[in-house]
Image (cartoon, rainbow, N blue to C red; front, side):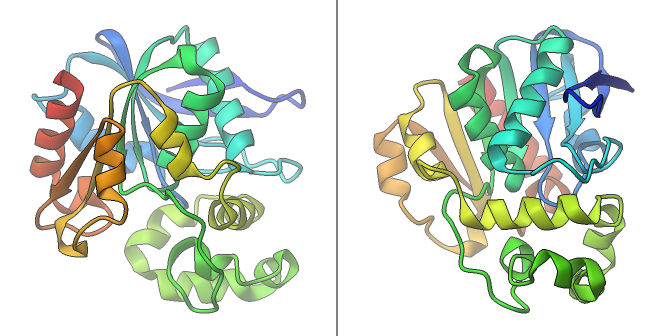
Length: 255
């Protein structure tokens, strides 16, 4: 395990690191997740192993600190991640990022371009969503006020999330989980999809084949994004079908 101070208050981001050759690969989890749990098996798969790999937990999640004074916008997440990568001596990383982590990775590449050489996004959030009570993911969490969430809304989210997601969500700070969800639902300006279209580095977008055609896939392909449907999986592609995730990721990183 490694760590780096990333705020003026001394808050630390932590990551599990696998030694290997350059370029460094950085794995970034989604909302309420943690990178070691979601990526350890695939990052160490023979088709992906051998590179220096950082399985990073974003601020407020997993083994990283959970400051209540942090705002947890996508921009702040990206800047804190950038500070950790600089402390780790990383430049030109190949970033593999899931869900909210993909949104953070897009902001990272836009704001700190020297840190990112390639992007592989696994079912990342590209567009804002409308908060709705009972909805899955960030939309459901963002339907509460922060006070409502802290005073008991988180228990309702826990019950809807189920044991699998709660296994890692319970590690996140409640303020961190709520504010991250609100800002993920709200999106960035320009929106994450526009950031993806504007980037000029190699980019791939993996999504569950069962979800049907990806919205805006033609525009993404025209902008040079490799769009890859992955069979036999849901949103957690790397857990549901690790072999297919590894094949798609390895192909994107070698293309």
